[in-house]
Image (cartoon, rainbow, N blue to C red; front, side, top):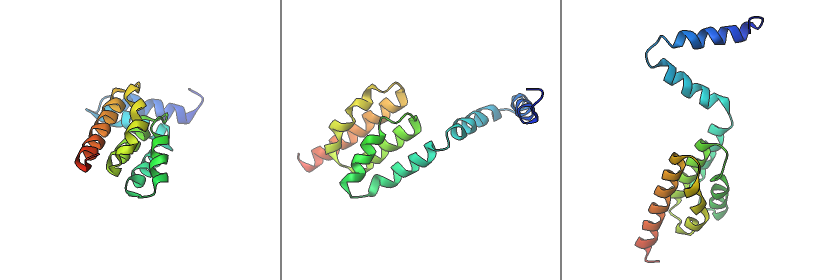
Length: 123
């Protein structure tokens, strides 16, 4: 680390930011988001598909539900909820067993919303 100026600068920054109140939290989020720069793009793509009426878009969102990134999983589930297509409930049930509680809660909320949509349609 001592021979690499970039690593030394990063180390100095990380140590110094600890003295600024709440800055460590923001820096942690920044590191998480920039660690995998394709996740935010994939999540944005999922949100974009929410209002697309093509059934293939619903299929693509279902495929994104078990994504390795929790950001993408949450975006895909949110987009599925916005589609108001109760036929997707069965296809996303496995998300209730996700290892992240946030994903489990998002899946449960999505299923609840879609089931209410189904009830209001009388199916």
